[in-house]
Structure formats: structure tokens, C-alpha cells
Image 1 (cartoon, rainbow, N blue to C red):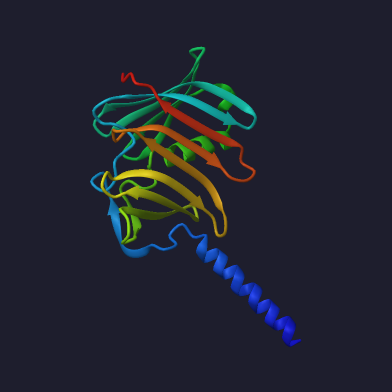
Image 2 (image 1 turned 90 degrees about the vertical axis):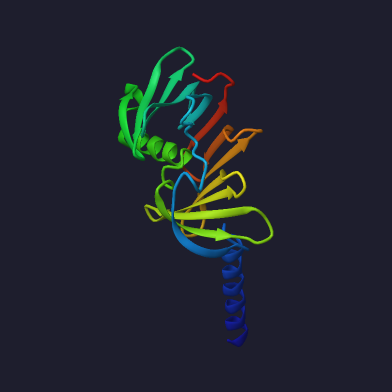
Length: 217
């Protein structure tokens, strides 16, 4: 009886230790909660130039490739447009004051679950769930990285930010126990991400890879 109880206690302690060590904020200290603005992080959407990315999207065993255009059309309003290599427009989202509005979608993609998935992932890539939101700020003394943590639909979003450039290098979406989704941002000498990769974990089969083209619009 005592051996069984001791074994259960050891397993419980091991499980708790694993959960804590797997936390994205492990070895970081909670500093405060604050409103995150563009003075705290560098926006993915460039206000001075429209951006052009070569796009690869794998969605439920369907592969799409083409160009994604990020273009600010007026102060506070931008458009995200995806056009295939054959010149077919797949979708067009308007982004106004951190709100997404669907302007156009290619009919085969016009399904509620697909549109919801695309919108959520594009919002994640463009940091729409962080900008102008209240977030917990975690810092570590031995390097220049910090983490912002927000909660969205019962999921926790963790944004890993390089303090000196204010660029987001990685985003993790985590449920109660496991990582659901991950976005990696790769930069060169500029503050504009040259490559962005999004990948779902588990049963959702969606991958997005964006590679910046040198030509701005």
C-alpha cells in the first residue's frame, strides 16, 4: 500500500516537473501586464512599403503556391491578397484597426471551417492578437529576449521578442498541456522578416511558408 502510494506520488511529481519545464516561460520572470503597441514590437506589415512574399500553403492535402501581397491602402487599413502562379486570386482580406474583413475568396475555399482557420492563422502571423492587446510581459536577466503572453479563445499565445530590435522571432500557441501551433520568423539585416513559417501540431493539416521577394510594390 505504501509502495503504491509512494509510486503514485513520484509519478505525479515527475508529471508536474515535466509540465513546468515545458512551459514557454520557463526560466523567465513575470514583470508586469501592459498594453502592447507598435512602440514595443516591430509590426510585420510595413507602413512605408508594400511587401511581396512567395507563398506555399498546404491545406488538407491541397497545395497552393503563388504570391502574397501585404499592402497598406490608407492609414490604419491594409490588404492581404493571395494570388496563385496561374494568376487566380484565392483570397483578399482587409485589415482595419486590427480587424479582419473578408473581401473575396475563391469558391472552393468558401467554407466556414477553412475561412475561420485561414483568418486565425493569418492574424497570428501578422501579430493581430498581440498589437493593442493587454499582455503579460516575461523577461530573463541573462539575455535580451522577452516574452509577451496573451490569451485567445482559451489558448495561450507566447510571442518571443528580441529586445534590442523589437522583432518577434517565434510565436507559440499552447493549450492546457500541448503546443497547438508555431510560427517562426527569420530576419536578415533589416527589420522585415525574410521568411515566415507556420505549422500546426496534431490533426489540423495546415502549413504556410512565406519567403520575401526583393521587389517591393
